[in-house]
Amino acid sequence: MNKKRKKMVLIIGTIAAIVLIIALAPVFIFMYRMGTPWQGIRRTETDFLRNKERIIIVRDYLIISDYESITICPTREPGTMFVGLEHGHLQISNPEVVEAVASLFNNGYQVIRKSANAVILQRWSGFDAGRGVVYSIDGQTPGESALSFLTRIEPLSIEGWYYYEDDFNEWRRR
Image (cartoon, rainbow, N blue to C red; front, side):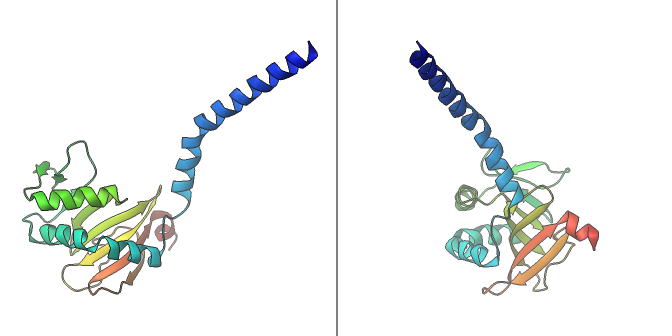
């Protein structure tokens, strides 16, 4: 009887441990992703070069767009972009661009936008911080008019492209 009871306690304990691990796994993954920057400048540039062709397609489309401010996020409606409150969400008219955007989102990019003099591709974000690559449309180093709370910007090996970091808390302390 004592052996049966120990065996039952062991089985119940094992099942409880497995359920707890499964239940808490998303929490630990979320905490890891939010607490640790996804990448630094070297890994960002490697990733940029791997996706360069798709990034250039999207950049060129955004530069020639009639809209001053554009945001493209992964949504339930692939191929849409937000162009401000006065225009709302619009379809991207070029199928090659829609495919490039979808591929970039599938490869971990989180937000693509055109703002001021820059095209920004955010690769990582946390609670108050973001990291990614930015292209200067006018040849000037992008500043806070394009990237709010900018704390670091460094040129990449491809002319006109920069690695950026923005962090509200660090910016506020300055």
